[in-house]
Length: 318
Length: 169
Image 1: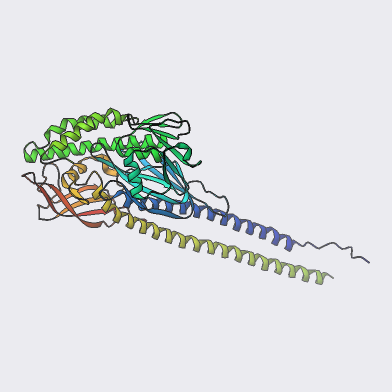
Image 2: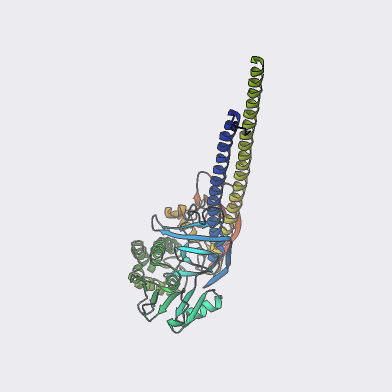
């Protein structure tokens, strides 16, 4: 005889199953949320730490300087953003970390803003190691320390670069940068930087004759001095933004030097007085920069200021 | 029969109550675990943020002396005192270094104890560039303060730079 009685599903069981399910759901939900929050916090911490780690590259005398590569615990994306808002504009750095739990990449964490940093790189630097080198930018006085950043995954191929650039890159031992005579010798995935020759395969063409940069999309920018490296490592939008920020700082510095000159000439009987009107005009014009063309527009004034300052026998302003 | 049924009902009620207590205990346990985790995490976050802040302030001292607004062309890490007075007068620099207090003190030789302005310089001993309402304990570092004397010769003196970033609450 078969037992025809069904399984007795008492109220106690049902109650336990429902409440148990709710508790389990809440526990899983809380864990997932916590992991997400934790990853966001971690990303913000990494962005802040990165800002601190970059400080040694910005200090000290000398021309180019490289610091040991920065290694991340996991594969990381560094988002480089820039804005020209405010007196000096801002450098924004945010970070996203990868994880084997949940989504591979989190959305970028809180952006840390730096009004006094100028980072030239691709808009997203991805890898577990980044390379950094810095160079001062002078126009005509030192205006800022430029930071160039690229990851261990990025490669650059410089076709026929000027001798001094090749020499400097070699002396600093910068990684993932190769030099060739022919574009066909470049690795397929590398960023191809052409000097003098404009070929369709070039990602960037740099003409030292008119100090121009032609980007892959046909847009033209201009450079002066160490900004040539900005063309190698950066993207057009970022490059233009950073140049505008540098011009804003050059303008404020012109007023600082003007104040210094006023103070000095009052104390010493006219010392450096001749530069004052030039500094005032330069400050006004540099503040109005809306593109990298401002480098060309203000080149004459900058050279003139440099010549006048170098000509001072005593009390040079910079 | 009635007595047996009442006994079963009572037993079931006790079981239900037991289960309810266990479930309440589980919920309280989870809540406690989460609270302990959050308290520990917030504490360690505050500690790490504070540590990063201190590290940044120390490095910032070095960076400031080399920044174009303060650097003296004659030596690395030396501050141009005339530029420092000029920067003090310019409001644009208030948020530039993201510090809440920035002061340069002329330590040796002695000078009149008063704040430097364009009018009284060089007869003064402190240049307060940034002074927010709230700031933590400033970190100090010795620096060389350089400028031109009345005969237009380079002259450096001993100074101290005080920097403070907002403390993590």
